[in-house]
Length: 373
Image 1 (tube, rainbow, N blue to C red):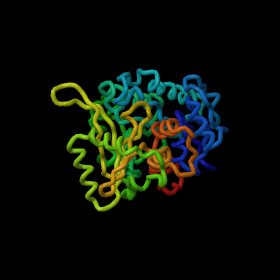
Image 2: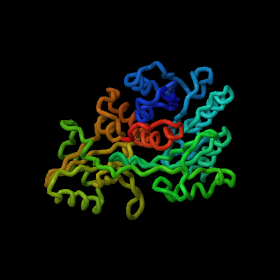
Image 3: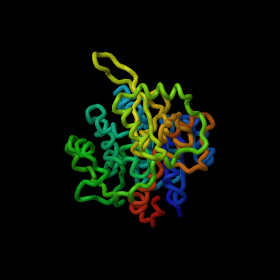
Image 4: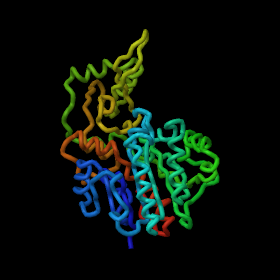
């Protein structure tokens, strides 16, 4: 029998994609109708409920799940947000998620495991108060929990560090490390050290192995035959926005003797003498920058292709964004580019979920893990 899971803030079902066919979705929920359409198109609509999580009641959730997953909204916790943290209307839905789980527990249907995911900025939001509140919700509901920071770059050619907090009910084992590992960076250790005494003492230093060395680079996700390359004059203007050190990076790529792909971001930066100016910043380290929802110019990445004297650039395609998240090419994306980029930029990387499932969730439940891709 497959373990059942609940997927809250489900988006296009990327946690479901990561858990894989060895798991059964009992219930999924999201408030966004466009994402709901993508979820239904890829997984079917039978288990999906469109609506505000704050309006859900435990009676709407069937059975007893082994895992509850919640990639709750990051807008109020991110560095780009307004600093409201868990007090904000969007990120504050974290507490509605826990009210549902508390209701399930009162009915004897508490999930054995709970996992939540958000931006790494949640560690320092409101001076660490939000990180403490995230962990306190686990403790208050009878879960022993530990935090990890996992960058999707360990699996995919995208820099995407995210905070994961995993909790288990009493009697459900989670592996604990004697010393910090790769997924316990200094920022996480500082945040744990700053917790109130009871939460700090209860925090689990979870043991999670490092994956094999990533062998994918940005070039591997480039969509052949994609259109939309900028006219030469616009490419020249993009290059003109680069500071000398970034132009030097492009020139170095021109001398590589092969085709090289990189990413360009437009940023507003301070300039000498005061004021600010738009700048273009480039990277050729084989990684894309973190995908974001396409809410502004700085959130849109340009793909830059350099081969000798030839330099051209265009915006990333929807399929490239999906590949950077680890979604297969048969994953059905929204037809509109912005909707597809929003879906990808708001999601959790499925390969990270699969690694957690293989090395934490499935062993804790006494299951033989599926292959962790």
